[in-house]
Image (tube, rainbow, N blue to C red; front, side, top):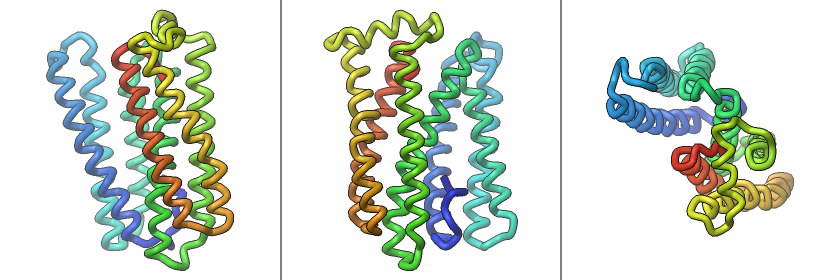
Length: 247
């Protein structure tokens, strides 16, 4: 989301967000490496994509660290470094997707990235109006629009998976949603409630508080929004791992 935030937010905002991204990338790289080792290393079945995934994730991490330092020292070309980091990260998403169902998984991952990024960045930017008093409200409005777009795309993909034609591997998993009290069916409904319905119900309140420039109120609602989005995405990843259900 950093390309959508104006420079007037200040170097500290970009340094904080890129430092948080570097921390999460480090954790993701470590977990991916552990999974690669558990899969048996080079030559193991299903492990052929891991070298590419690990290389692209490490490259993204290195570029994010360089971008953080570039913001600190106000180096020229730091936006180019950010663009390279984003391209490398997108490549890692492609490498992580299972070849047999890559289009659906890529759509799921990209919409998840957009939703999580917009929710987290909007909440952080809401705080920054207390730091940079002359920061234009258009910055928060832009992230709010991206948040709405992410929610709509996420809802459409979940709807396609639940009701539309999907890959044959998911046909049995889709039946989980039919049983409200089945072990994984409960999590399907919780994912829809917390990750889709809950955030959508807050969109109107966020937009109205942004329109009247009540940034503190908007930030408070965005806290709740971020909690719901994180809960929904956590449940979605659980269902993908436990039942092969790409929600």
